[in-house]
Amino acid sequence: MRIRQVYRWKRGDGWGLWARLAGGGCGWYVGPTMARQKSSKAASVPALELLVRPPQSVPPVCVVFGEDAFLRHEAVVALCRAAGADTAGVGVARYEGETASLGDVLAEVRTLSLFCGRRVVVVEDADKFVSSHRPQLEKYVERPAEGVLILAVERWPATTNLYAAVAAAGLAVSCDKPAAAQLKAWLAAWAKQRYEVTLSAAAAELLLDLVGQEPGILHQELGKLAAAAGGSQIGPELVERFVGSWRERTAWDMIAAALEGRRTEAIDLLQRLLMAGADALAILAPVGYTLRVLAAATRHVEQSEAARGLSLLHN
Image (tube, rainbow, N blue to C red):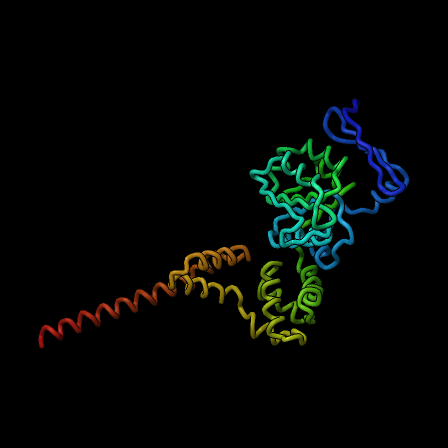
């Protein structure tokens, strides 16, 4: 077995070696303290946990991965804040993964920030960026700059050396679709943390039943309920009054927007329904009903106008 490259790092009073093998793969040799950390450290942190309990410090390399776009966005914001950067833009440089240059990204993260403690660089939609520069990123994780590099990706395969390197020396945040039990606990904590209101267990369960397991939409509905509650507890009665059948109401709002010529809003509402898992046939049902009513009304108007015209001719 030939060793192609060996990396060494130090953390606290521990140390470790990471060897890249000639045939692919990697091997580990870990010092005493690092051995304890490696055995106890999870490969990734759930996004819901990160949002409720943001980290006190942020390592130089973070990866936010998973299919839920809302959780990815909120996790990036939480990491930026934990790194001491202003999420409004000061101290944060953002790049699109499709067009970002590795040289530009690394030069940016090595730049000292004049307005906050550490420079933060975020690469959005970075799947292509990571795939194209995986070996260079592996080297960077081994010897990172003082700044913080955040990669936001959908896929983060556990079979790569980069995955192992970030798991050992960085932070990976999982943004996959959470289970209902996790969302229920998160809703209660999120209501207190973000909106300073109390959400009862029954209200959280009813909200999940009506809206579905979509963190982004649950967040929006929770904000609406918090405003309606006015600082008091959110109970199931308030959920029934202000949420109701969310998908049904949104479908009718989409139809109204389309009929009034607000095409962008109608498309956004349609995308929201589809992202929430609404069945396409269920969406088409109210659309078809509305079109049939409009067709019947049009025929009635045309018949009335024709009859009126004939009446005027006879007179």
